[in-house]
Length: 229
Image (cartoon, rainbow, N blue to C red; front, side, top):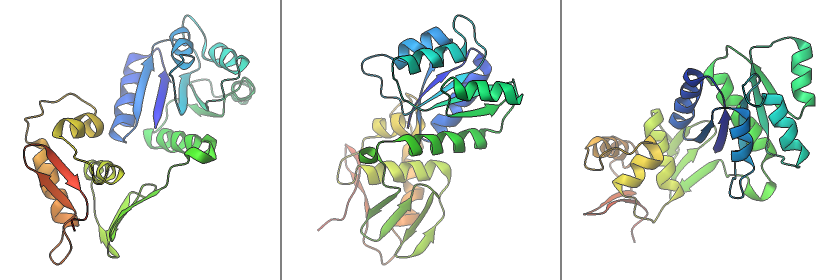
């Protein structure tokens, strides 16, 4: 999911960005309503969700929201605010907000609301299949559970995102740099062994004795997930 976060509090913004990236989402951060409006209305912007603070300098969150709705931008918007009265919530929703979350909040609730909003408002033609499969390996993206031949596979958060990325790109060579950028969200040294360690652990979990190997090393290039003939 590609998210636009509009938040003037740097500490809060970094906290949200880190959590969303660790959950496999891409986040662009705007530091005020004016910058948020500019990013949201760029020709190539394809945000699936906007998360915006209620009170900000330059342009208030609700003013930004009204301006976006005035030009018929329909991207779902989740409002964050320390203002928790019923009147303020109603004002936020009537200004064009699709959900309203009061600060302080648990990140798990923010993530759940964000993913539900993005899924609910996605065009039918772009709805994401929640189950990824290859041979007898299945990954449920909603429950974050995997199984092979009906046998449950326990995955930690990083292993889930690695497996998800491989299944989305089955048959394609995935380099270490691609994995670092897509799964870790940072530009680590591609020579680091962190990738090899995680791949080794994941392979032991999915390529059990007696099973057809699915995760392969492509010497000098990276890795590939496929069923070899």
